[in-house]
Image 1 (tube, rainbow, N blue to C red):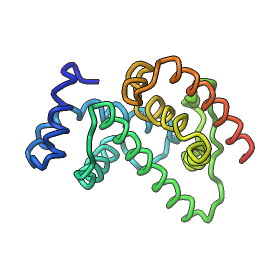
Image 2: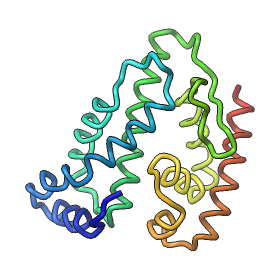
Image 3: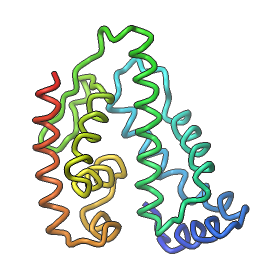
Length: 189
């Protein structure tokens, strides 16, 4: 993510404390990582998707600014929240598109063992979002592991640190969540 991990954390804390210039200083430090996350998201979308990675990042910035009351813990927390915001944008976009089509023709979600769909197959971000909400209702920590790993792009170690749990706990939760989501999505389709 960043080669200077403490600088974004310092700026996040300053922003939380009301330093309006801290966000302006933070943006260039995190911009490339947010673009990487956006490109990952868009690579999973259908080829004719009208939203571009740069537009996704810009919309995420706007929504993150609205979260200026957030008590940022560290850069992992920021990137996890950024990933959550991007996911929410894509889900809102997909739901609006689905509503326009009156529910017809939406592609099915395909997930491989690592929760990464093949590039050639489209997927339904709404189905994944619904499954994650269901997982969060019964296993909140496991859902958070998916948020951080899959959507936030965090490593096992970063996820464990952000959640204040062991790496082994993250591994177990990650395995369980992947299987649970595959089953849940399969039952819905």
